Image 1 (cartoon, rainbow, N blue to C red):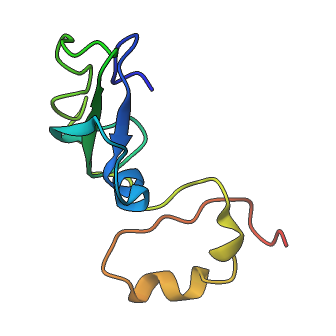
Image 2 (cartoon, rainbow, N blue to C red):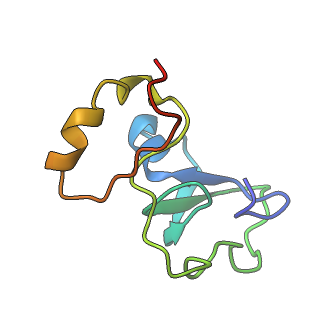
Image 3 (cartoon, rainbow, N blue to C red):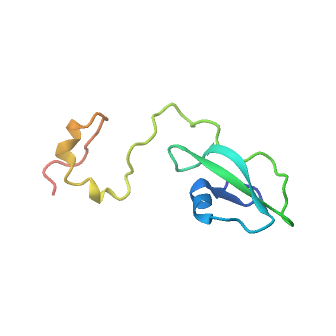
Length: 106
């Protein structure tokens, strides 16, 4: 939401893929692949262009780089139900894993 400006309609590549044929007089302007807050990779964005809509906007407000030199987060701390019980298999994975918590707690 924060990438665009007032009156600007932006679509992700996933949304464009679901659209199919566009109505007559409506087109899409490719805004390029952009980094978006909360995503580890880039996402291609498109601006909707149609009669009656503003066309000229300032550049998109997307970060040009990551705010630090830390690697991208591989997993989330939210929704860890899937990973409970996988703790014994973490050592076999090539990524670094850290298990913390009080001992002997179930």
